[in-house]
Amino acid sequence: MLKAVLLDLDNTMVLYDEPAFYESYFISICRMFSDIFTPDELKTRVIRATMALRQNNGEVSNRRFFMNVFTEGCEEREDEIWRRFMHFYETEYHKIEVEVKVPDGLHDTLERMHRDGLRLVVASNPIFPLMVQHSRMDWAGIEKSRFNLVTHIDNMSFVKPRPEYYLQICEKIGEDPGDCLMVGNDAVHDMVAGAVGMKTFLTREAGEIDYTSVIVNVDDRYQLQHIPTPDFSGVFADVASVVQQLRG
Image (cartoon, rainbow, N blue to C red; front, side, top):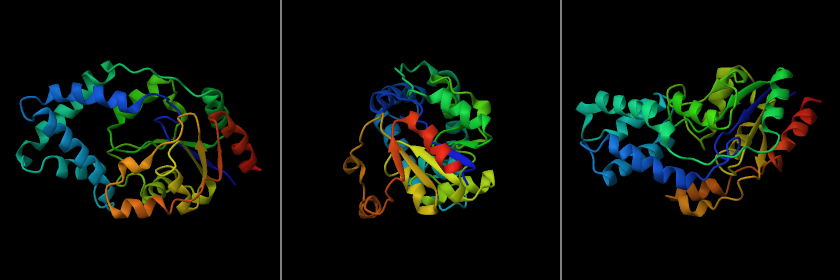
């Protein structure tokens, strides 16, 4: 019986142009670190440390793992660097211009699931602090009080597309994977939840994503060939009927 619904955030509940947003993001954050790193060096360090998070085996938080990689060669400045990241997210992140849409039926569907007593999780890839996840929820007017858990860089020690990420969520909310539904637009990072026994729903509003451009090694190519087929797919508004069906 369905007891919990996990929902991706970017281009699932909040529709926007991610590549364009992150171009502006890097321009803005580079100014915060201009006396320490060149723009190219900062961008390289952020991307390398973020990609490395897929190697975190759960022994440390994602923040600890990220910072270990990001600060290679300047470990003595780690505390200062993290303070700067947080200052940026507190003071500058919300100033980055972004044009946002929400999928039809978003708020009605969330309200219905909350009213029905389902445990709700914002299952956004936990590579950012909680305040960043909250900022993106605010873009779409998503009520934080409806959610039992929001995954972020400090409370998780795995990232998508590792199946362990979804098992860690189940542990935190006290539910069996077989009683959970994962909803997301990403055919790899979100639908891999099916590998641990969750039901999956692939949303279509954001369109198809070409993953060949982000393959970085042979293991990635293997992984793309072994992602379970979604149990359901459609527009976000269809989630309500799927939830009703799974609740029996």
